Length: 307
Image 1 (tube, rainbow, N blue to C red):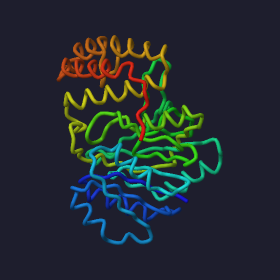
Image 2: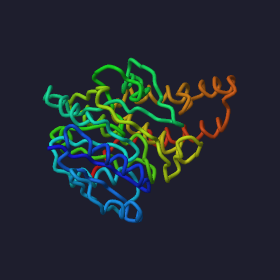
Image 3: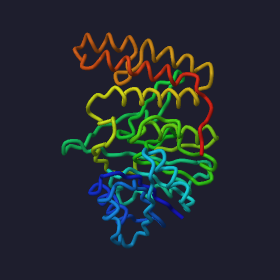
Image 4: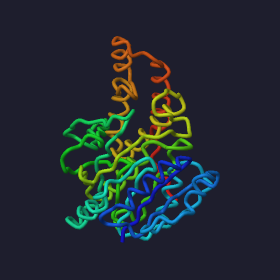
């Protein structure tokens, strides 16, 4: 039995396109759970129609944030395989077929993800990357899920396109300690790393594909514009998640790396210097300060928060 969970908020047209993609699946889901906020009246009204041949169950939630929505969906799901996607994706018709194939091929696989073909400004972001969904020993995260071309075992899956074996996620929930009142970025990393820590394989297969049309967010994180609160939340969530995964010693190395080096999106001192020299100094100091505040405030918090 396959369950598909879609958290949604005020992106009605995108959600309807996503459901059309699910209607065209070669392997149909047994149930689709759409988790929608009680104040999203337009989406709730649109979901009153039939989506034959799908069985769509609408679950209303009064709490803000993706984490609460995903946990609500998990709690009400019945499938042996639980596939999760965003409301701004359109799953390709072989999506669930290839998800099911990967789980059937290896009983040690606990999670399966794949490529999200990102559409930006009418253009599909194309390219190829060898390493997908990895965490270096010192904590640097490599994503690139939208550019993978080969099947490989990974450390983390992307929320727009991930699925899990129910047995593998027994007792695992999306982390309620993560900050933010909307997207709560890195919730997908936190969840998939918990599955990996439990001893299960995570597999990336580019044939497990969705088309991703990144839509507007209704919180501090507007994707393409700087916001200090969103920057802080992202750094906090990433640090909390990675330190829990790495353990005490490597966590200290990660913190040193993130302060003195970092990345272009979460800069440490060396990145600040490099970006300034290359003329990329928009909000640079604010970005550095928000990042380091998030890092340090998350540092050392290791008690798991679960429902």
